Structures are given as structure tokens and as C-alpha cells.
Image 1 (cartoon, rainbow, N blue to C red):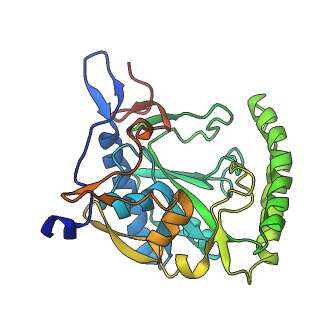
Image 2: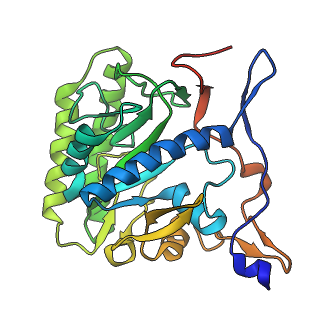
Length: 298
């Protein structure tokens, strides 16, 4: 019973992202330690400026199952309230250490607001190329290891109204992708996406629901992860790799709604075990990586 009360899966495995010509291996765990440095800085700034953030998606699931990163998880996602977003940008401008930098559409029109995250907070002296066949990083500050930040926004309580508005963005998306791949910055289309998303948010500010903004067009039809605001806020602190980071108020409920009822760790009579099939336990975001420089290494 003592081990059961510890509450986390203890088994770990190394997942290799890249093997260099000299035999050195870069693992997911190596990447996670770099990401953690960025998150420590984000947490410091948010605490100083009283900005509520949440570890979300796989980062939140890692809290439940591992008390930190899922061993094969090669990114980190945080959510910021819509009403705090501009304050968050200003706080980063004022207080972000020189070790880090960030890109977002509000400050750089080369950034793509439909890429998924609304911001990337990166670490200098590192390099990462994502598995992304549609949209490349056009911002010129660099391609450092990053933490993704996204807005959590008001959405319609009627899922068909929500999907109808998301469909508008999905219809615009191919034109943005096409022009971007022709190295033409489609600023008018990007501005439309931002305007339309903001208008939608204002119309549903009294909604009981929260989700990613409609400007993120990548979820399947009617499969957007949507949660009750009362399950999300106020955020609570949880152990994450020996730190105390914020995530959902009712984190296990939110994770089950997002990933299904069997996503949480299982007790096998002796220890906590992972429920995800072994063949699905693999990193999926990294195409190339260098943790010792700002370009590819061979």
C-alpha cells in the first residue's frame, strides 16, 4: 500500500530523438530538461505578474500519471486566459531573461496564428525542427527549443454553433497555407482570422465553456476538447518534476474528457502502470534537434 500511495508510474524508458555521428544520443529526456528551464522562467513571470496559466494537454496528463513529463512527450503546452493574453505578452517583454525569446502574431506578422499555439517561448543556444509539413517557422529570431502557449477562450455552449464558426476558419486555412508555402505572407487573411476569433469570443463571454480559440483549425469535426470553466478554473498547483506548476482545477475529470476514460494510470496490484499501448508510446513532434547550438548538427 505504501507504493500505491506514492501515486505515480515509476517505470521509465529512454526515447532517442537523434544519434550523432560521434555516437552521442539526444533523448526525449534531454529535451525535456531544456523545456523545463523555459517553463521555470514562464512560471516565475506569471507568478510575479499574477497571470493564471495552466499546463494543458499531454503536460497535464503527465501530472496525473508521472508527476512530470510523460517519458515520450517531446513538447509542453500551456494555456492562458483570453483576458490575460495581452498582459502575458507585456510581462514577457518586460521580464523574460535574455536566455529566452518568444514569437507571437501580435509582435511579428510573420508568425502564423493558425499554426496551433498562439506563441512559442524559446531557449537561445538550441535548435529544433518540428514535424510540420504545412507551415514553417517564418520568424527570424531562431528555431530554439520551445514551450507552446495558447489562449483558452470563450466558446458557444451549442457545439454546432461552435463548429460552424470553426468551419469558417477551416475554409480560410488552405489559402493561408498555400500563400505561406509560396513565401507570400497573407497578412489580410491572418488579420481576418484574428478578428473573427475575437468577435466570436466576445459574443460568448457569458458561456460556461472554454476551449482553444476558433482560430486553431486542426481538430477533427466536433472533436474540439471543450471543458466547463468550473472544471478548469481556478487553477491548482500540482507536482511536476519536483516543481509546483498550475493546471486544471479538476484535472482528472478534464483528462478523461479529453483523452478518454482509460487515459489515467492503472494499479496492477504491485505498481502503477501505463494504459497506453506500447506501440503508441513514441515522440511525435521532433524532426531534427541540437541542444548545443542554434542550427542542425550531424
